[in-house]
Each structure stands twice: as structure tokens, then as C-alpha cells.
Image 1 (cartoon, rainbow, N blue to C red):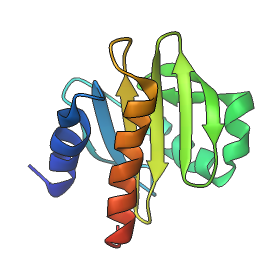
Image 2: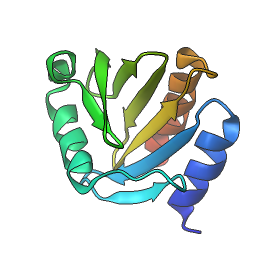
Image 3: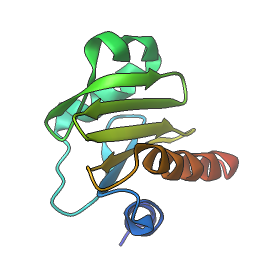
Length: 127
């Protein structure tokens, strides 16, 4: 298991606040992801591009794992989206973008907080 995979398994999904998660590099390539969750190749590149113009999330939405989410937050450091009672929280670090998915049994604010806390930790440590 790579170091990135342990962050997905233990620090994101392992908290119980997220159902699935992934970490991509700023090149859009997958570094780690939850088993059974498949980000499509173009999704990583599109997410990276969206962080370059985060205000567009409100018009364009976010596509993660083949599902389009309505953009609810967009800035240089974090992007959030919802679809019904599910959603995604994304946070950018110096080297990566963390993606967390929550379902109807999890609280959106708690899910976003888990993603942001790990992103802050990674940023503080040069990642």
C-alpha cells in the first residue's frame, strides 16, 4: 500500500465521515482511491482545470466517478458539490487534490471538514 493509499483508507474513509475517497496529483493522475471507485481519466484533468477557475463550478458542476454534482462552493482551496442527499468535497494541497464522497447517511459538513483537515495537514508538511 502506497503512502497515498493509507491516507485514503485511514484518514479519509476510515473516519466514517466519507463513503469513498481519492487523491489525484496536480497532473490529474490518480495517486490512490477507494476500492470499487473509479475516477475516469478525463475527470482528474477536469478537476485540476476547475481549481484554476473555481468560480465556474457553479455553472459547470463537478463530475466525479461518472456522476455530475451541482457546485455549491468554489475557491482556490476547496470545491464542494451535491446531488440529492449525496455529495463531494474536494480540497487542493501543494501537490494533490483530495476528493471525498459522502452518502445520505453522512453529514456534508463533517465530510468536508475531514477532507479539509487532511488537506491542511498535507499542505503544512509540504505536500
